[in-house]
Image (tube, rainbow, N blue to C red; front, side, top):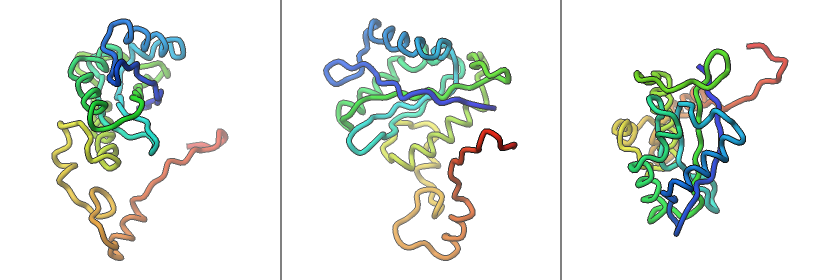
Length: 186
């Protein structure tokens, strides 16, 4: 299963909140379609974040598996979450990342009435990573264990110097994204 990351796309605002108007949403999707024509009708996961002086901060991870990005990302509940963040929690520019599922033919996958199990798993993974960066993440579902679990050097690491076992575990688990040269074989 392969996914491609698109964005960040800046959301249109009005008076400091996400513009709910049909015109603003149409302009947003038209801009995306002009760069990646079938992306709005694709499915996968998405990330709402804000960009401020300290960088980009994740606020909400969503799943678009039974509906397209275009139909999922701007539902009333989602806009309320985005605006809750913008109204009191975080100043900055609102952004949306779209993480689109690809088919074996490298086209974008389409939504399915049964959803996509891989995308559901990816959503949970993304929530865990986003929660590590922002403990005020707006997601409620799939966060109970992630918020309460403490595994030193993996999740919710307590303050203080790690033990030798924890340091060794960290070395064993620490992975960084490495790009392969075009000539490399997998």
